[in-house]
Length: 394
Image (tube, rainbow, N blue to C red; front, side, top):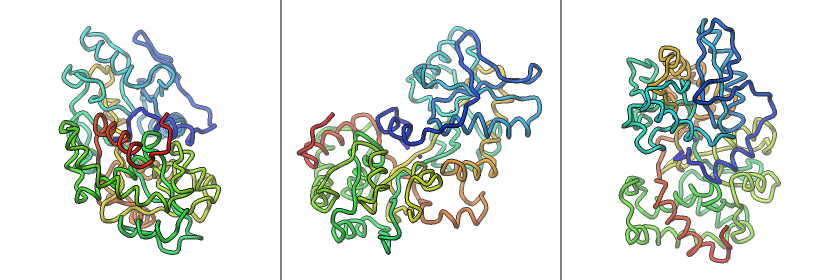
């Protein structure tokens, strides 16, 4: 939930927190073939995923039977790629197969953005998609369709998680949050920005605040070191001013999971957290039952979408498109929210009104973005040099 798809310590921390115990029905895949657990007469769609265990379990054990019941003649083969280098490695094989006019036996990427492999989109290895091919794409937010190669099937966003038994009125704007932190010393903490997205996006929100709440000034192709210093310096002052009021005067946890654990222990009463991790933690009893979540209303914390994509080399294009459309149906979207705390890939207006009412405090009017690469590297360097000056990095 954004972007949140980077392969980093942030993702590793989320995987450790979200690991499940259910047995996963899955195969293994190479360019020469796949392991198929399906009836011999079914058209098998090979779905490639390197997602967290809770995601791959859900696809194999929940979505698979639902899709097959709704689409007789098709079977899903969920292929987990975490141990083999992840989806980007498989995508490179898909590009090579396209160039060689070969069949890589990959039909659907559960989570992959072709922009992560330079040249993959230009190679013609991935389908350009629209609402004629996938009718339910018409229900997705326009801002989520960043390129025609993407299907925004779920999302996640950083929120404030707080213990309502201790916090009577949660802050809903950045100035209110700063006021609350200073009025309740030791009760708030965020994680190190290079170790988890929940901490990084708190830092990003301070940077946005210092730049007129305008995320658009930071783009993937406009990094300049002098400009970064000018835009970051006021944020370092904001964060340094907060530090004496933080837990242990700035004992920043090293990741998403340690931050959640600190909150779960009762050491603090408010943190930043990923929406999916917090919602699942509440439902599983890992976090206090009095936990509530809220999003800032003046400008939300960053997040993003998990995008699916479809190789143009698939020999089962009709089935892959059926799967993409099925994922965007309101029933499946609602099930993802209930089962593992995802944000919907379609507009909330297409879901049951009571569902939107239930999550009204965490539905953001915008999902701000902050670029990876040089901007994020400069953010991490600057935070350690100017805010957490006593911490050893590593």
